[in-house]
Length: 177
Image (cartoon, rainbow, N blue to C red; front, side):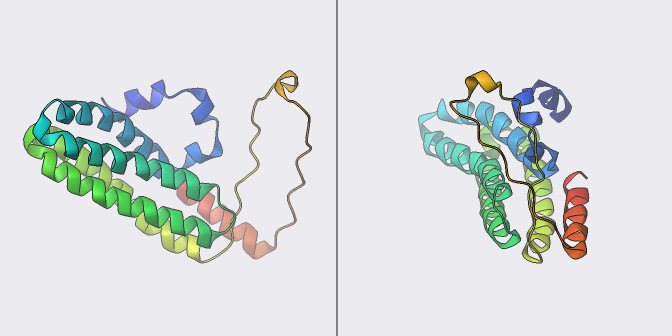
């Protein structure tokens, strides 16, 4: 499956979230989807069943940790989860390398290239997150009032210093690249 084709198939419930603007998250989510096909092939052979479990766990952990980190309030907390995602990406790369004989060189090379891009991006994001406090921009989630048990007003965003605005704007630009 090509990335562009996959991207068009992602439901709006995911693409409407501010997290979707992070290219590294989109790549990690794509990897998790294509890994499903790979682990299905590996699980069919009893000799590679354990490898398929490890691969699926590791690839799923990349996007999950990016999502978890994105929701954290400070750069330091975010960086910690992005570091976990980096570790899972490297682990996934190791499992794909070991699975190349079963999956084929072309498939393995594609997955390894995707993982290399995820790793490159995380290696840029992690140090940037450690330098300052960042907040997720307010996102409007479409929830019908009739589905809510009670309405809770959202607090206004506290005012940010000029330095905090500069840090947030720089990070948003990096995330949309």
